[in-house]
Image 1 (cartoon, rainbow, N blue to C red):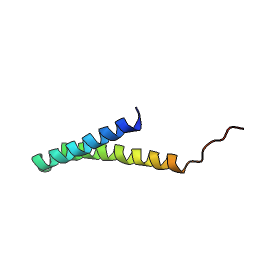
Image 2 (cartoon, one colour):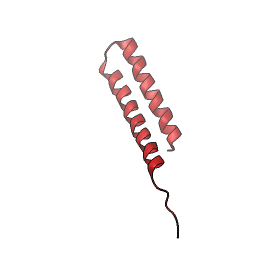
Image 3 (cartoon, rainbow, N blue to C red):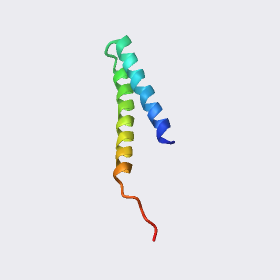
Image 4 (cartoon, helix red, strand yellow):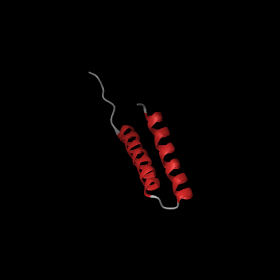
Length: 60
């Protein structure tokens, strides 16, 4: 899957978790869904930052 798909999945999970938290007031599922979405988002951000600082490989 490409990064845009991962970003959309992370946003859906975080927003879904926040929605569940607001309407269910503290259910553990809301925190689990939001946490998984946030984890995917953080991993995606780390991947983008890593690629930004990585030296390009030059072919001889």
